[in-house]
Length: 362
Image 1: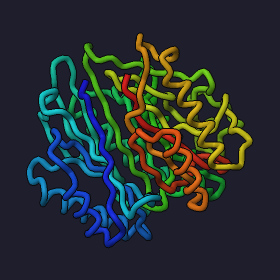
Image 2: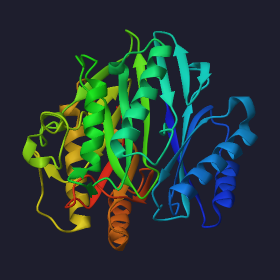
Image 3: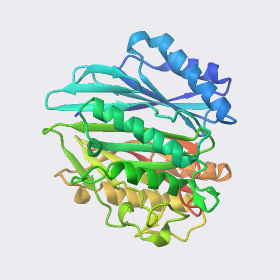
Image 4: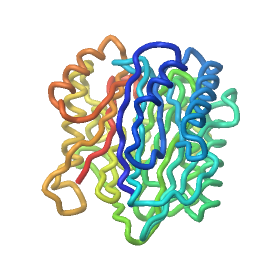
């Protein structure tokens, strides 16, 4: 299993071109750079596509043939004009054996791993369902072309424009979940679903990133949270909107996965059981969410023997910019040594004000 590392970089406010160049100047040679994920708020889908094209161009100019993957997330950064997560793989641990259209294939002793960039639909003008089905068809081809199956996916990020918006009785998030369930329906999932995040963006349609791995030597376990109902077991009462399926399908993800010595923490909010906590305060929701994550990643809850786990990255999504100062202050005070950044994004339920994801080292 590749011991991937993430570093967070920030650029002061400026044009998108200036901020991207600033980030690329900061990126050091700390191993094989696999992916650069940029967070910034374009005005609309036209600007989003223009910025994405520029980002790809600048990365290609800097790195040439060995250019890393790119992903562009339409979410404002709270503390800077632009944030970027750069994913590295130590050069002595794995070999990049193939660079495909939107993915990198890594190979090392005992395993193969796929890392994707940001996968977007051919057109942003279609419905969320149409965009999602287009993306999952592309993911299916990437997996098939490289000898992977759908249930080899272990981590997935799902970005959905205006995630809680309703159109003719259909909710964007539910439309995405129905498409994901149809795609996942071809697999057995005997080892549990991927860890995943489903989060809103201001524009950009639907975008998905994923990791997949296969190999008998890979530690790969789903992790439940005793404080929360598994998302894939939710009842109909917490799902929203009309569905073309016999009933609304559930979000198909696990609360976390342990892969190698890394815990991939899914997007987590202030939910106990399957119900949102009755707290209309972003800082209090943040505190509850971190307690839920603490339970999730505690040694007693992990499927391997260990003394502790340490957060190596936290990504904090805040619904309302007016509440961001309080959330940032709480996290910086209570988790001062953890690499983290803060983004403005709508969460999958209207009453939820904060969502947090990340990684922890075992």
